[in-house]
Figure 1 (spheres, helix red, strand yellow):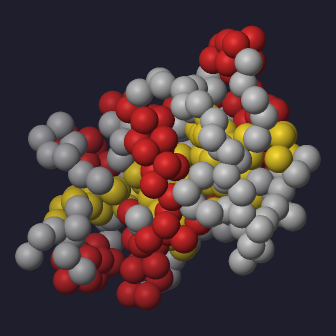
Figure 2: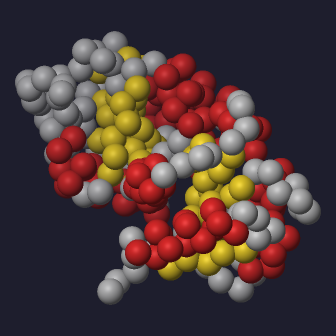
Length: 257
């Protein structure tokens, strides 16, 4: 059977670790278990994992030191904080951790968490009154979860809760200035500069505009309503290149679901 990915469980409670290991292996994941963050740090020098489930209350290396080292040396790994502590959201923000799994949890909770972690997350910043975009259904079928927000604060809260793999923002469409929203957020969240961003716009791009966008770090622009294939190609470019795409205007009059 083809494995879905590799998981490292860092948990000092053997019952919890055993329960998670058995369930996740049954779901098709390769699973490694260690009972201390010190051991996890050593193991990560030998193996590659996609997701780490990290218990918060553990002896030895602090959670802060472990996550700081992890983000420096393995920024591609996604982390799930496991804790029964009150204020788990605040703890996750301090540690800059993507996901939270509150204890105690069930198999259903664990499975839902894994789906959220491994599914590709797309944050879509657009005006709530926008008509439906043509790419939405196709992007979902391609394995993305689309997370819609309509202003800067909603986007900020979303970034803290779950770092997206890609951000798509409308610019100059129906009054929302996605360019300004992203620029403001980049001043607040340093990590946002590493997340590929695509702007959707119906504006014509003159050379001065392109130059300004390039200097501002916006390298990928498509029509105000691209089809799914066009946007997916742009996303792949955004994740691997710095090419700007010229605009071809599309229209669609259906309504946002």
